[in-house]
Image (cartoon, rainbow, N blue to C red):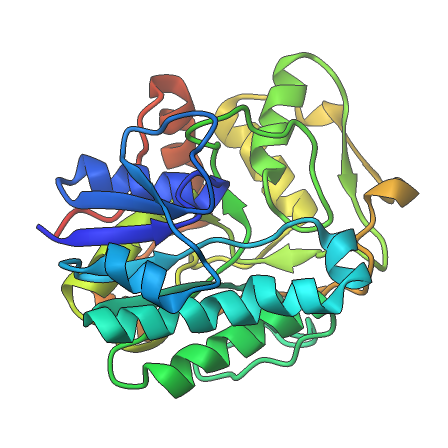
Length: 319
């Protein structure tokens, strides 16, 4: 079993990755800026993220560090460029330098929003072409891994992540990306209410969704196989928002007649342009990690099982 440190372990993606790795017998340690309000099932060590030495000390004896932590106050990122750079690029530099000092494998969680939205199922070799500040910060963070950890670093892009937060209550509304889209749709329709699938010029309309727990299972393989390079931890199918909504109704037994379509409210728009089609190809990833085909239907059924049982349900088995 591996010893794995995770920044952002109390966030949405980080809590799912941590839960899967812990369930599979790995030694998990969260690295955080402060003691979490809600204590997870894994220990969290407080470190100074501005000091690579502080992080390196916490990483002694570990095999890998998964860097999930982000700053998600997007308006603040726009208003304060120094804060934005330090929260993404600067933090990735500190974590990667600390990993190098401690002899630990660095893994960065990146995003489909490093793409410009003009292509379909972009391969892992594509360097990206972001059209907003969030994508730019992420693509600069990717370059940190390439520059500072070319021999052992891994960049893991994720997209359209469905799932539920493992520590706190998940949001019950969609955003202009695909985050929490399925969860919020299921919660709304189960309550007998109509759900407006967002459309419009400033909405991410197509992506390749995956399940947060499945991302954790694939991260396990990146670690155990010591995979190096850029990987797309996504499902096989590129779908539109309405296609995903209709299939969710079918899998969960919900009334598709409650689905409507509208543009998002003005106060819910992202403060910049967003990629229209952010779908990612995953052929190289599946080959290197030994991942079996994963249709969007299979992913939805896995999420349905997770909601019914309360247990994270990845499709990929443990190595």
